[in-house]
Length: 504
Image (cartoon, rainbow, N blue to C red; front, side, top):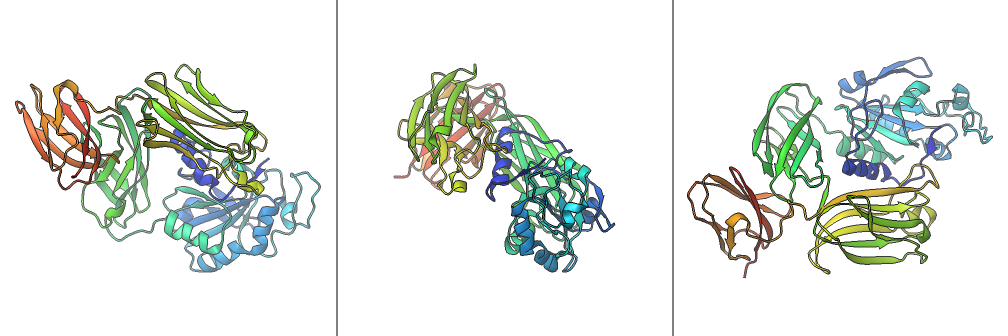
């Protein structure tokens, strides 16, 4: 039996973020946000047959309202006739760019629950709010097998499947918001010509390792068929150009894997299409490692909601021993702000626990949402980076009154988070620098490559040095003041030096 979704409009988006950060991948047998939809053919209650891929291949977006006949929230939405108005503009009654379907998702229901009249006995298997058919011309699908294949955890929900076959979830929303979601935010339009696009990058890195795997989706958003696309990889070594070959028609997609890249610094991997095309705005992606990086100082900022007794937290080391923890709170909306010294470099997990499973989502009960943040600190008052942020706008658990938690993994003293130092004889001076800096090079028996990154991971300068050089001078007068990372790659060695530019 499905659960009535009581969460706010942003829940599915937030849930996908959490899954993304945890690298939890759903199987194709389950429809999930960001995945490719599986094909299916169904018959509506009027006897008409509908095939998903046929609709998508014709350029249509498919919008499916998944509901249960016993749900008052879905019933109110039906009474407002929002989807019927949307269909009148863009569906079968309008310009035909969208196919709008309703799907009854209670697997035990029959046609009787769709026809009504209202019957609320407390048994969801045969409860109904009334007549779901006479006020609508939308196709209604009552297919228990398909509903089970969808494996939906929440209802009601709107599933948007774009012609590129990627699935998006949405809350029940107005005609205007649904139009913006479909035509501006979710389903990109086809451009005339050669338009490869990079989307949906995720990473995988083990704590303690400088090696990272990156996966991205290459999509064809142009009218020309894609056969060859050159993709550059930055922020890791070896720098490389990946040559994709295949055949992608418009809206076609392929997953590309970049494995065993070695990170140069605590910065994102940058993927970019390096050949000209008609739309360069979708040519690049940046993605950071899925394991956070910190100093040995971390700060926890926790704002509770009106149910403080439900919340606790822990920081555990790689042996799963509790290093720091908190709980037993009694003051509504209490604010906690503490800095902790981690005992050693290594891998850690932060857990935010809630005994009821609703997290800090207090606004759903008429109160105010709390929040939780975890920072890496330079010193006890200076933030290096915000690592984890939960804004209190969604529940932890799909099931009410069920204990649940959020987990965030991070690494203290990572080889990627090199402190200010001169490694292996390399020196940079002056540091901080104003107009220029000198890089003193140790006696080396190989050529080298040096790259300067800003703290967002963007490459701002790069040069190739020759064997035997003893120093190089770098003009930094045009770069903004701030902290930068200098990555140096030799034949058998790698160095990272933090440098500061401070204009006088």
